[in-house]
Image 1 (cartoon, rainbow, N blue to C red):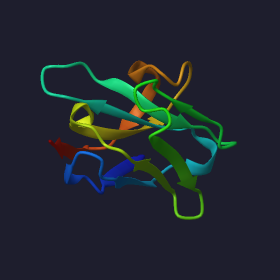
Image 2 (cartoon, helix red, strand yellow):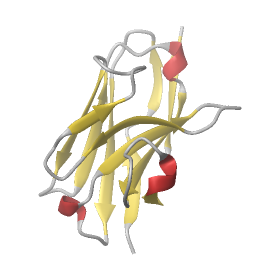
Image 3 (cartoon, rainbow, N blue to C red):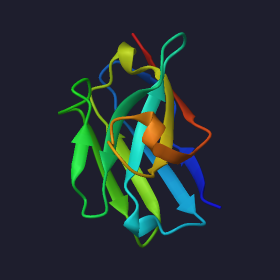
Length: 122
């Protein structure tokens, strides 16, 4: 059973940075693509970023140039470095393990963490 645990969220000011971590256990982490999604109140869950086994990366246009995804296979951990944060980045951020298909669709991920809250105050 794959288990994903996110950490690193918090309350920050506009323009600040945060680094989210997602620790994975119970599965072949190094062979799986991993993704980050977020969900704001009253909105649907949306794709943020993904990284595959060869470390190719994918980003939403909303975060491209500000966020960086990376992974440490020795530590079974994926990271999301978030810079130049904006109020519209406020959401619960979820880490997920990819199953098959497009990296951009939440439907194609089969394991999810519990989420970590990111709040950007203006």
